[in-house]
Image 1 (tube, rainbow, N blue to C red):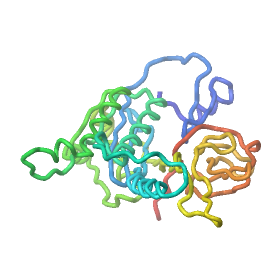
Image 2: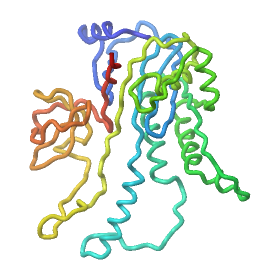
Image 3: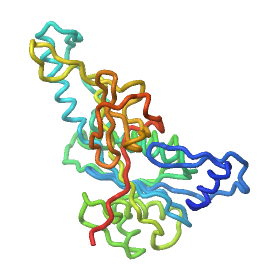
Image 4: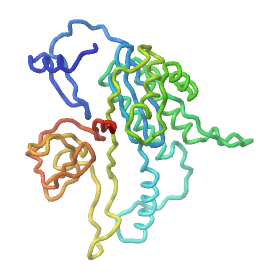
Length: 326
C-alpha cells in the first residue's frame, strides 16, 4: 500500500486476486495472504456544496481518489408534486390513503435529509474500499437572523441536518470539522488558489478544498500527486409513484415507477455484448432499457435480460472528468 495498476493486473492474471466492480470503481480482492499488513493512515476530506461537492481520499504518500459529485436537488419539487397528486386523488375513485388532520412535521425536511444522506452513502462506500482512519468535513454554517427567542438557530434545517450527518458519520470513522476560514488558511499555506468556476469539472473547483482538509489530518506533500477527477451523478428513482400525472385515452393512467427491471435492480451496472458497460433503466414488454454511464443517454429499450451480465449494484453513474480544453 499503495500499489499500482500494473501490479494489480498481474495479480488478476496470476490468480492472486479477483477483480470486481464496487459501484463504479474497479477493485481487486486478494486471494492469498498479503506479504505485509502495514497500512497508512487515510483521511477523507469532504467539501459540501449546494450544486457540486468534492470528496478526496488521501494519505501522506498518495492521493487515491478525487470525486466531484452533483448534489441531490430535486426532492423539494418532488415532494410538492406528490402533495398535489395526493390531494387530486381524493376526489377520484382511485386507491388513496384517508385524509389526516394536520400534524407538526418535526424532524429533518425531506430535501435536507436527502442531501446529507447522499453524502453519507458516498462516505460509507469509500470506507468499504479504503481503510479510512477519519473524515474531515468543512462545517457549513447556516445564516441566522436576530430572534430574541432563538428559534432561527435552534430550528435551522441545515443545522439539524448536519448534526444528524456528523452523528451517523461518526459510526463509520472519527469525524473532524473545520471552518471555512481554516480551509482558506490550509490552501494559502501550500500556495493553492481555488477556481471561481463552481460548476466546472476541475480539480481546483471543489476537490482542492477536500484535499487540503484531508492533508490537515494526515500530512504529506504540498502538492497532490493525482488530480484526476471521478464524476458521480446520483440517479433518480420513482419508487412510490402510483401512476403517471397525465392520463391516457379513456381516462386510465398507466402505472409508473418501481425499482426492478427484468430481474435487475434499476441503476445496476451490467455488461452488454454490443454496448459494453452500462446501467439498467426502465422495462417494457419483458425488455429492459440500457443507459450510458457517461451522460445517461438511453442506448436501447429492447435489451433482453438474458444477454446482459450483472456487474454491481449502484444508485449513481460514474465517469472520468472531461480533459481540460487546450
